Image 1: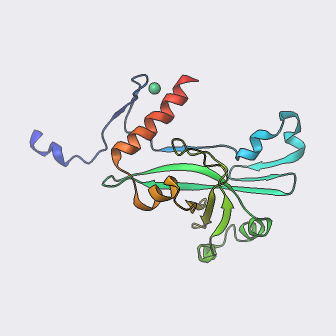
Image 2: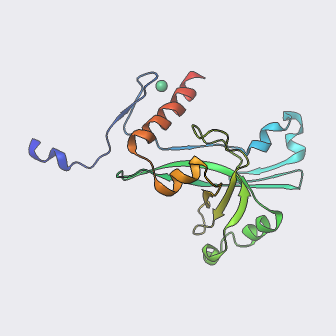
Image 3: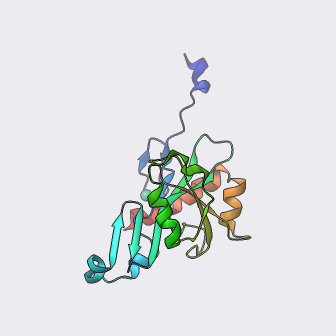
Length: 180
Ligand SMILES: [Zn+2]
């Protein structure tokens, strides 16, 4: 049945540039476990100063952070490049998010402003660039959009990137991961 092989829509297998490790398909989801600010706190003080849940973090009762999905569309490709990133959020909006946690209507909320707290690989310094978070359906983490003017992350989120650019970004990340 070779004739119909071209109809096979499975994404192509992927081989790591740095070490030849093979993947069933290109890995497209990456992320950070902590907001940038968290990393500046000495280990011995973490317990006292930090409240951390999977996608929420409060430091010193004054700095509020949440995690969301920053999506970069890949043009002419079925999947997107996704980074789980942290942003800051005001205390007021953090409390609002808590109140609306299980509320299906929360998607109607205005976006929450914040400063990005994760460096997105290959996009230069992205700590503290402007971002917004949009509520998704209950149970899902918000969508994060860079709104820093003229920043290439903002532009790529808006326009999407080519598959070959996505591949370059992924190769860069994997090379870093595989070297440690
Ligand atoms: Zn590798």
